[in-house]
Length: 232
Length: 298
Image (tube, rainbow over all chains, first blue to last red; front, side, top):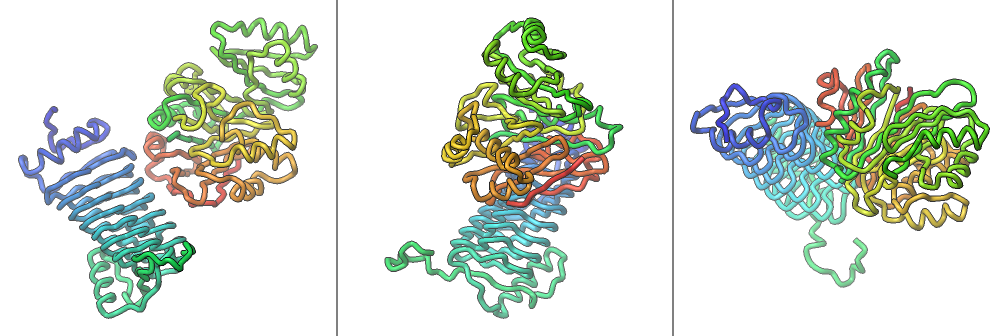
């Protein structure tokens, strides 16, 4: 594949494959610590699979799977993103200045995903240890089957929040349309206030942690209950 | 998968650009649906009794001139026929029922795709970019349109199974998704005298909505009934002579994005097919939420 020079990360001139090849193989060799991607124009799979402590600015709206499997990199999208931003992120940070479509941060193992606007349905589905902060609202079925990590929602949460939740914890500042099966609201402990405060401080948001509610698993689905008659 | 697109141009002065703006949208969404494609465009045919009829015939080398001559001879109606490839466009004051009867008697291989005082439909099999080229979509001028690129999952790939589906006059619908209960819906409608042309699930949704409207409901009220009656996944984009209407089902797992500027409202399955539109960088962009009815009138 043709080597790509730094000044040319313009997706009107490069394919996403060429761009990602550059980000995977040239970063470190020519040692830029910061790159800019121009004209993302809603294209999918931009900056997936990065594994270097680089800062990436995406100037515009991106499509599906932006920053998927990210490790170490700090990616900032100056626009909106489509489905599954930062899916399966391992570490690093992905920040979206606009809104995110569904499945934001799905199954992320680590790192921080910050959506400044709202995220639609299934935000943090199957979260496995990553942290997600959403400045606006989240859609229905968010944090479905989330296993570890935190979802902080500064606005409202849609229907079925935290359905079939495992050990992940959700904090919501606004209204909760409805809780999913086995999710319950619990009292905030001091450690919860600290955690919300720490996560918000990483994003620059300054909502008082006291305004947040905690949602966690009631753990009634952890073991088979023969008397439940499948009426969860 | 399938792709849906729609465009409504607000100022009359820019409606001549509809084809130029919408064709790249369709080409791009060919990635989501390479089997077949279709486009319904709306522009008034004029005052008086005239209607526009879109006709389709899949027979290679079909003689449209002969159909035009036979029409004038047999029906004693005035008619102006123009044709491109598999599509014929007839403008005539003839009653739609009479035309349908005449066609089925004299030209059973010709299908009536749409009827109305504004609508015109093109649909065919093949890659969307190829279809757009074949029928000259880039040159179309109209106030609004809806289009579809199909990746078939539940019924055959054929021009008849391509979207948009139409029912009644000046109404069409495109669908991304799949319905679970089209046959029960269809059996109920058939008892009420509604005829079907294909075994496609989307046709059931289209005829259901048109039947409710014929019974006196607004499209919006018909859609509220559809939220209860339609089981399955759907993002539906519809058009009448006056408006574009968009809904997503309660699960909202079929995508849609809307961009609005002073000049247009554009709807697509994915943002990347809107990226070429003028003023898109400053457009108001949003993702429609489940079970909300979005409607934009001319």
